[in-house]
Amino acid sequence: MGIEPGVYNINNDNNDYAVMMYGNDEEGIPMVCVSNPNGQTQFNVRESGEGTNRYIIGSDWFKYNVGAAPDNLQEQNFPFTTLQDFEWSIEPAGPDCYKIHIPNMDAYWFLPDGPSQTRILIEGAQGRPAEIWRMVKVG
Image (cartoon, rainbow, N blue to C red):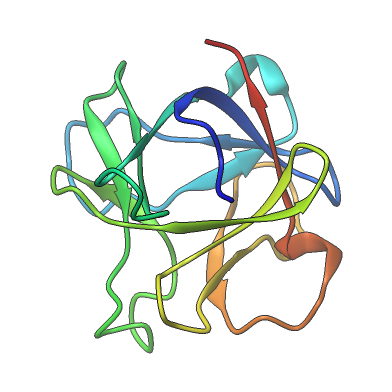
């Protein structure tokens, strides 16, 4: 079973950094994580179709969704802002914890060690704590 649709704060479970979307009115801006949760974006998680267990992750505030380039992960190995609906798989990984990946691909969100505003990457699953995302429903 997947996640319940709603509005969520998304934090990396390894270091508690909060996922943030920059509102630059431009597509292709990388998603980053910040150390100050006051700066985090709240994300609307909605099913792309009933019973599909695939989700659109977006920001109602910034009017962008989170997308990826599954055919070009060599050059663009990070989630980014897009106006298109992009489907993600969200798999349970513990209480309020999930793994987020491109459906039918070994391409998971991963936060490398780094300072605030480190870019989220998309990599193959390796069982690392930084592949786990805590998603707390706020609305």
